[in-house]
Image (cartoon, rainbow, N blue to C red; front, side, top):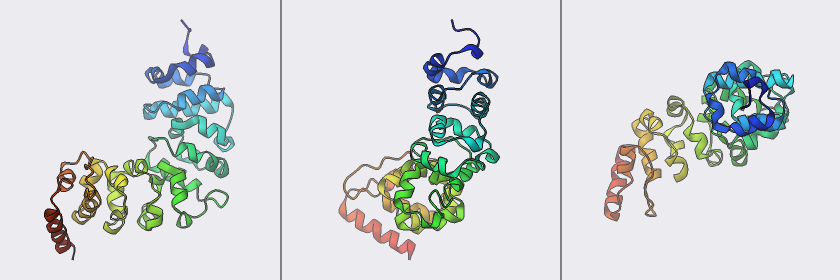
Length: 260
């Protein structure tokens, strides 16, 4: 109908949607991704594998004749999920200011970047013309950068205070690698989580927690207002389904004994 992949027009590419994920990396390399509308249609797809993402990012650079350092905010927005196809060395050359302008959009995507890529992306935001040092970020900054907060280094994450933790989105929490989450977040920090943040934890993250961390999580998940605890972890669910006031009081006393 449309000939070889290399002859696909921008309008055809824009209509492919999820079907494009059936193209091989070699076929994706043959695409002509010049117009931002075509790039944006590919960048909106979230189910690419790693090899496809790498091929797409390379295709965008080859088609537009741009280098990673020359990408502007509009192009970053258009790239969307394709951003995770950039090598760490390429990410390090991104324009800090232009990337900072696009972070409000990118932070809303459930990016499939590796831990190293996320770390490189969040480091771009520490530029003085972007958001500055991580230690100075307030809740508004964390809300704006969205999922990119998952890329904070362990030492920076472990130093977060209540005001900063309040700004971390549930989606950002859910994509933090389990081992990193267990190491970076202390019991006291987990106790500062909101109900929505605590519910966002994956079963893998919960399994990686130590006993005291799980206790702090259970305290946050306790349905004081009668809300059901929505979580896939059976341990946490059972801790959150106590409705009798006397049982709640006894449960708290037991937790206090364990803690102190």
